Amino acid sequence: MDNKTELLSKIQIWVADLGVKAISAIVLVLIGIQLARFLQAIVAKSIQKARIDATLVLFASNLVYISVVAMTIVVALGQLGVQTASFIAILGSIGVAIGLALQGSLSNFAAGILIIVLRPFKVGDYIEGIGIGGTVKKIHPLNTTLMTPDNRTIIAPNRKLFDDCLTNHSAQPHRRIDLVFGTRYENDVDRVKQIIWDVLDSDRRILVEPKTLVGVLEWGTLGIRFAVRPWVNTADYEDVYFEMQEKIKKRFDEEGIVVPCELPRW
Image (cartoon, rainbow, N blue to C red; front, top):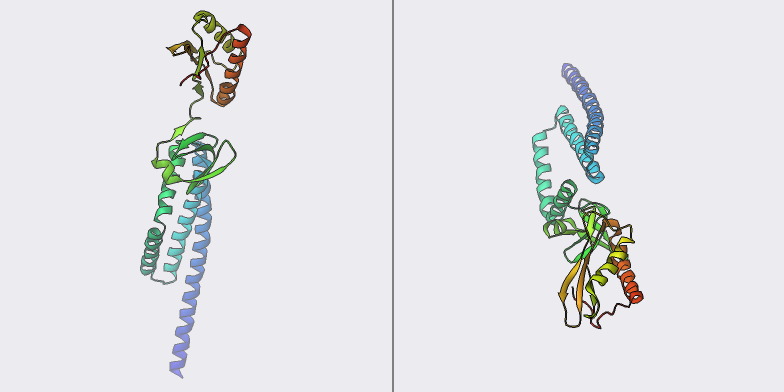
């Protein structure tokens, strides 16, 4: 009878001790979740003040939240008497296995973070690289979505974009348009240049600074080639490029400027 009483007493003590530990672990987890949310909000606000891409804000804040919650759970398990050392070792082994299996994805992920932080391009930029070109629509940690001028969607791995040489046509606020117009030798050079200047001056999208260049580029087989290099805002580049060629051709026709039969070389 005494043995049963002693056993029952030990069970009661063990249950009471376990209950206290369980309550402590639950309270610890709840506090950890609140702390994780608090730190998540602080990190998000701090990164937003630095005007960093929204994708990185979301990623960094979520990473902080998950890390704090994970550490809290490990501590709570230790509070319950679980051997956390072996538990952490198992998690580490799983992490290594997953890392090896997702090696390509992890390299894309790392490149995506570098793209977001270093900002070689951003959403809305027109870029060319790895044999493709298009307007950046989305930047994800693993890939970047581009929209081509003919409305095709391209999903490019971040690692390839980051490792390759890229041309960002939207990085600068202004761009120079390089045009070449050919005329026959019998046309007066000064008159041709004046006609081109008149067309350029009539377009308000042509910038005063940097200065526009109009000059003789070379003597061709059938005529003289003129280089016309106006500067425009990047957003106006394509419209001005096509419209200027049409306007100058029409003005040449009105003024009786004869153009050679061959097309000018770039």
